[in-house]
Image (cartoon, rainbow, N blue to C red; front, side, top):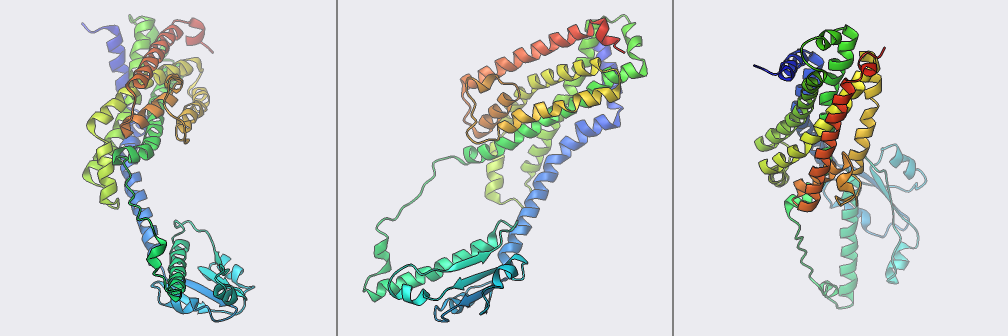
Length: 399
C-alpha cells in the first residue's frame, strides 16, 4: 500500500506537470538555453572578428615635414587605405564620426629628432570600438613594423646586425593544463547559471503548491485527507526539490550535448578543451553539489509560499529573493575569491566556488568534504523547518 506522502507527491507532481509555465521554466529554457547561447555567441563573435580583420581601414596621415616615409610604407600594408592630409585640426572629429578609422599625426621636428637618435613623436588618433579593437591593433602592428624597419636601418648604418640586440631567445612554456586554464574561465559562469536554474525551476511549483492552493481553496481539502501534515509537507517538498534539480540537470544535459556534438563556430582547440573539462565524472560531481542546494531552495520557497495569502503575494515575496541567490553566486566570479575553510560553509557561494574548482580539476578534497557537509546540514535544517511550518495553524490558514 502506498504511503500518504507518496500519494501526495504523485498528485502534486501530476498537477505541476500540467502547468505550462512550469514546464517552460523547468524544461524548455534550461534544455535550450546553453546550446543557443554557445552557438549564438560563437557565431556572432566569429563574424564580428572576421569583419574587423577583413575591413579596409581608412587612415589619414598628416606629415608636417612630408619626409617620414610613413605614408609610403603603410600603402604597402594590406587592408589599409592611406590618404595624406594637411588639416590636422579636423582629424579628431573625422575619427570620432567614423569618417576615418584612424589618423596619424607626425609633427614638425620629427626628422631632426630621428636623425639625432632620439625617439621621434607620432600621434595615433583612434576611436575605441566594440569589435575587439581589432582596427587599432592592426594599425599598431603596422606601425610596429615601420619602427622595426627604422631600427634596422639605424643599426646597419652603425655596422651592427639588428639581431645583436636580442641576447636572449626566450622560449615560453605554460605548464598549466588546458582543463585548468579553461576551467577557471568556464567554471565561473556555469555554477552561476546552474544555481539560477535550481532556484527558478522550483519557484513556480512552490508558489502554486502552497499559495496557489490556498487561493483556490484546495489546500483545506488536502488537509482534511488521511495524510498527516508532515506527509503532505514531504510530498509537496519532494516535488519542488525535483523540479528545481531537474531544471539544473536539463541545463547540464543541454550544455553537454551541444559540446559533445561540436558547436559550429568554436575553434577546434577551444572545443577540445571544453570537452575535456565537461567529462561525465565532473558533471556528476557538480550535480551532487546541486542536489542538497535544491533541497534547501525548495524548503525556503515552500515556506515563503505557504506564508503568503495569495499567488500574487507569493510572487512579490519570492521574486526579490532572487537577488539573495544571485549575489553570492556573482561574488564567486570576482578574481581572488577562492574556496577555503570559511567560504566552504557560505551557502550558494560555496557551491559556485566548489564547482569552479571541480571543473578546473584543482579541488581540495578537504574543502569539498566541508562543502558537502555544510550543504547536507543546510538541507536537513531546511526540511525540518519546512515540516514545522506546515504544522502551524497561524501560517497555513493565514488570511
